[in-house]
Image (cartoon, rainbow, N blue to C red; front, side, top):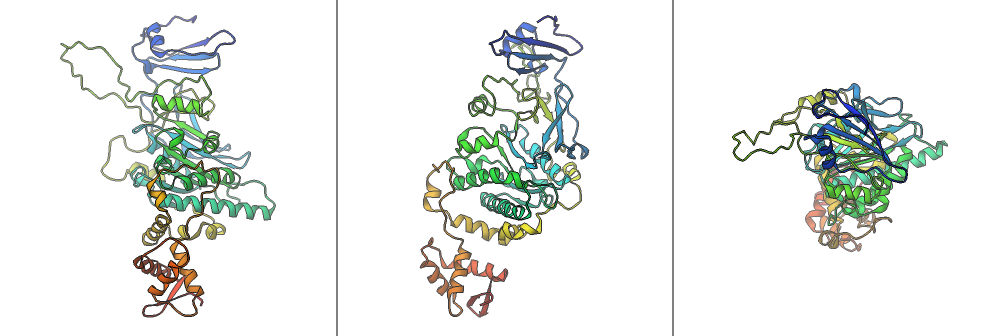
Length: 484
């Protein structure tokens, strides 16, 4: 260290540090602060690369205050990047939404503890998708509470694990359809909006879908991997927002983690175990050190037990939105997301966020892929139809699915599940020589070797088929397949 540093300096001081060849730069934050006589470690920023490091010491934390995001920030540049925040040195922090050089859709993974700012980071991404004409399929597994303003501003929204499965199946089918269609056209890459839009599937609180014991873990992991493999070249991207980075909370799949670590990985406030797991799983190079992100920017201090000062003062700025963009050019440089919406909690949806979304219609899936996306996509704005489809997904679970944790690595497709009840009913109606009563339909369905069902479920499914005109009531109490 060749430049003297005084703890009360009025300007930032930057020091270039290195260790001898053959060694890797490491540091102990507490000892470093002691050596520099600094009581507030949040004033320090360290970027490490191999045996060299840049140490910057600020008069106060440069990320304590951050401006609000604008729609202009979120317009993709010619390289497919949007500006999501600012690094500690004031340089723009960018996230890639699309790679125009390779025609590749992106994979997104956002980690962070509770209260670290994941929901607002996802909201910012959804706003950017709408601004840039990207089709957004969102599943908010916090019951829709994480991103309530997204309703009406994405192509397809949902809040149940069954809806996540329906979206993943549909996205996998869209990717397969596009691949076949592009092959017929002689195309070997995705061209943005020529003619198809980019499609992003985002799962907020993904650990609820992928953790051990989740009944949908195997199938969800399979489809996420499949979309990551095949969707990238045909404009179908996948994004996960998760509480932790442990392998077991993301489907238990090494292949899945290997795929995601090549994408846009963002790390908000973390736990020490999370950091160890990130290094162990290869999301960070061995030996990488990141400055910890505290829960609050209130500096620690020693106070006499006889001091009558208000020790409960909690006016110090929080650290929501402070993060590391691990896939960016400065993975060890701390940044902060622009503020999204109101600072204070609100009783309802946030008008600032709604203004950022704008009043225009969100992008929708191209008509050429509607058939591949299937019945669930067609029913995305029909709550009753979606309830029936979700119930059908739940009905496909075997007793083992609901009682025991999944153990598959999901490197192969999950075992085939029973067909949807509506498919089984249609097959029974089409095979019949004459219209059937609901009781006769039940008898035929029970004989097809599938999961046992009740008469009430058959009646509900018949009602749904009639509403969609896949079946018809020929007279009171009798049903036939449409066109037969």
